Length: 288
Image (cartoon, rainbow, N blue to C red):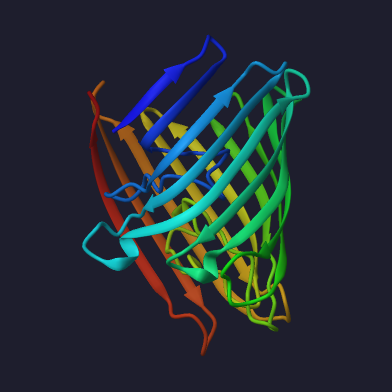
């Protein structure tokens, strides 16, 4: 339940339990893949009154997590300030600076301040387009965090979408690590399932950090949307190979209201390291 109030056509505020989905949800999201979505008890102000800018600020007092109220981890008492401003450079390019201050009273190790910027744009390539992303952020401990640390985040990607329904992508994502004092870059409010492979082997960033190099293929075959992703994981600090993963999905609409998804994740770890894991899903969705 929430209350919306619109000041005019450009600005509004929302108070109550709500979704907060910022950019690609790498830092703040709703974990909508799960049966129990992550929501926020918050006050949010958003405005487009500034020319070419979509500005959002949220004060969050509580995070309702995917685990539900039956366990202590299901709700986190926080003092969080989420500031995000998407600025259009022109019709094709934009830059989004952001600052996320998260003082977590229930999970002290998650208390962090993250400052960064995300650049996105498109360029023509034949009859299609290449979507480009470049992002960098830096993070440090705050408030009650028992460990003093700082770490960096970086992301580069390109996705070529062609007129024949085929899309090819190549990307690199790095979450910086620290073997001393043993605290890596973390994203506790993210939609984590969407990153570092669908097998969910890296929901918590290893202390040595992680490098993720991955290639994506998407294709539309009739009414089916097919996706394949290959990941190669290694540490940011040192030279540890974590393993590789292949993810695949096939989705289609059965009618205007119904759709079905088949999905699999296959992680292969290095000997003596992270265990091999295979996961399968079938999901039926009804929208009205």
